[in-house]
Amino acid sequence: MDPSLIIGLIIAFGALLAMITMEGASITALLLPAPMILVFGGTIAIGIATGTIRDFTYAIKALPRAFRGDRGSASKMIDAITGYAEKARSEGLLALEQSLPDEKDPFLRQSLQSIADGVDAEELRTLMEDEVTSVASRNRASSKFYMTLGGYAPTVGIVGTVVSLTHVLENLDQPDELGHMIAAAFVATLWGLLSANFIWLPIGGRLQRLGELEVERMTLVMEGMLAVQAGSPPQFVGERLRALVSDRSQTKSNRRGADRGAADPAPTP
Image (cartoon, rainbow, N blue to C red):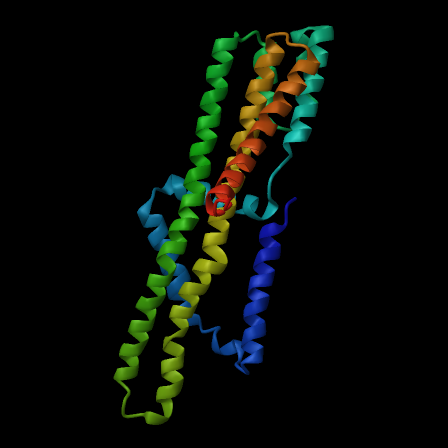
């Protein structure tokens, strides 16, 4: 479990609470039901309206994953695939079927079953690529839903403030109540900005990153199991998969280095 989202949200809301306390304000002044119902209810309703019911379903199912984090690391996956390569090398491809009950990763288990069933390499690659594409599409839909909520929430908050200010203008004959009513009117804008930047956008960004990691891991499984099916030596399979992970890391490092090089001024002779 990767608790980065939980840690980040606790620190963010803790900082908000610290500011409220230091300013001498009351937290109860922000917990007004009417603006909260409008901001959260209206934002979620608009998010549903901008997509499909299937997108909304994907987003709800993906929410626990945002808090739970990534399911596994690339190094553990490489070790597992290398073990299957050793088993296939020594006992044959049909022996991989014995490992199905113990394998927890569904994509890896599906590939093991396909290899044991005698699916040829071209068909296996097509099946696995289609699965990767399908998972990537679902992940994009889930993260996009929460990013959309983050985009609409501030505007919905402004709508709530305008509605409340209209009520304030209707009661100008009560000067003793104007300060309280004006302060309450801006609570909707506060919750719009707060929910967008403290809830929806972090969840959307988190799901987007987890989706990228899942696709990378599935691609690693695909290349590894195809090599296992082809009868590649276990050492070669492990080195190749580790090279794929290293190449991605090296590419990112080179890109960062190039950016730093472009930003640094050229040395004077």
